[in-house]
Amino acid sequence: MVTRLATPPWLAVMYATVFLSCTSFSIVMPSLWPYLRRLGGDAAGLAALVSLYSIGEAAGALAFGAAAAAGAATRSVLMAATAVGLVGSLLYIAAQGAGGGKPAMAFAALAAGRTSQGAMTGGMQAVQQHHLGAVLPASALTPATVALNAAATVGFVAGPAVAAALATVPRVPLAGGRLGVVDSLTAPGYFVATACVATLYAYAVHFGDGAYVEPGGAAGTDAESAPLLVATAGEDGVGCKAAADPEALAVNDIEAPVAAGAAKPLLPIRSPPPPVLSPRRLRAVVVALNAVFAVHFFGFALQETVTTPLVAAYYGWGVHASAVLFTAAGGAAVVALVAAAVATDRGVPERAVLVVSVVLGVLGYSALVSPPGAPPSLVRFLVGWAAISVAFPLGRASVVAAFSHALRGRPSGGYMGVLLAVGAVSRVLGPFWAVRAFLWRWGGVAVFGCTAALFVVAGGATVAVWSSL
Image (tube, helix red, strand yellow):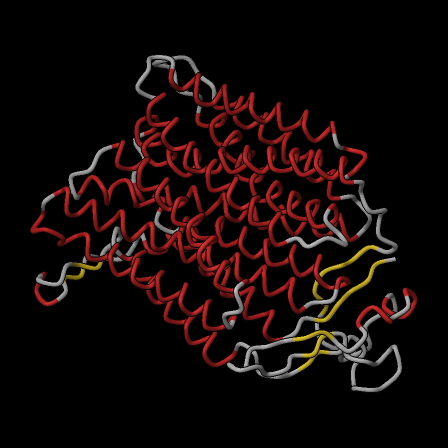
C-alpha cells in the first residue's frame, strides 16, 4: 500500500526556489570556460572557479543553517541567502569590465561571484531542510525531503538546457559598451540575477500564506478529514506547525485514497516502515551512503568541468554545441528521474535505483577511457556521456531517499548537513584532479579510469549495507 500526502503552498515555493538556486551552478558551465578565456584566464582558473562554488556552498550551508537553527525566521534567512546569490550574479556580470581588462581583477570578480552563488545554493538547501524537520510530522518528512532534493537535482541537470537557449543571444552593447555587453557568455549571469529577484519576490509574497492543506478535502474533525499540515503565521508570517496530533492517524486512514478534488499528491510513502536500525548498523549505513554520495558528486563536478574543453579538443565543438550536449543530458536526467519515481511507486526499492546509478557510472566512465592521441569515437563518447549524465541524478536522489529511511525516528538535520558537506568537498577535489591529470600524456586514461574505479568502490559500499537500505 502507498500513502500520498498533499503539498502545502509554502512547500511548493520551496521546491520552485531551490530548483532555481541549483540552476545557478550548471547554467554557466557551458560558457564558463570561453568566458574565462575572454577575460585572460586559464585551465587552472577554471578548476578554481568550479571548486569555489562548492566551497561557497559548504560555507553557506553552515552559516545560514546555523542561523536557522538558532531561531532566526525561516523566510528572513532564505531571503538573506538569496540576496547573497544576487550579489554574486552581479559580480559575475561585472567581471567583463573589472579592472579595465586586467585578468587578475576580472578573475577576482568571477571568483567572488561564483562563491556567493554557491553560498546561496548551500544556504537555501540547509535552511529548507531544517525547516522541513522542524514543522512536518514524521509521516510527511521523508517524502518532502526526497522531493526537495529531487527539485535540487533537476535544477543542477536542467541548467544547461537554459544555457543552450542563452547561447543564441546576440551581442548587445549596454550604453554603447560602457556598461559591458549582453551576449552568449554573459547572458547566464543576467538570467541567474533575474531568478534571484524572482526568488526574493516568491519568499516575500507567497511563502507562508497561512493556508492549510488537507489530504481528504474539506476540513472536518474525524481522522480522515483532519488537516495533516497546518501553516500558522509566526512573527514574520512564515511559521508552520503540524496538526495537533499528526501521528494519531491510523495506518488505514492515511492510506485512504485522496478524495476527488483534493490537493495534488506529493510523493508516495510506503507503510509499514522498515525497522529502526541499531546504532552500529546506522553508522555503517551513514558511512557507506556518504561514500557513494561523494563519488557521485566527484563524477558530476568532473563532467561539468572537462566537457566543454574536451569536446572542443576532441571534435572541434563550440559553446553552442556544448550547451546542446548539456541540454540533452538534462533531458535524459529528467526522464530517468521520472522513470525512477514510477518504479519506486510500483514497489521497486530505492536501493535498486542506487545500484543502477553506480553501474551506469562504472560503464559510462569506462567508455570514455582512450589512449593518448586517440579520442573515443563520437558514438562511444555520447553513449558514455549519456550514462554518467543519468547516473548523477539517480544517485543523488536515491542516496537521499535511503538516508531518510535510515534516519527515521532520529533528528536528521546534522546528518544531512554532513552529507551535503561531503558532496561539496568532493566537488572541490574533482575539478583540480581533472585539470592537473590532463596535463599528463596518459591523463585521459587516469581521469576516467580512476573515476570508474571509484564507482566500483561505491558499488562495494552499497552491497556491504544492502540489507539495511
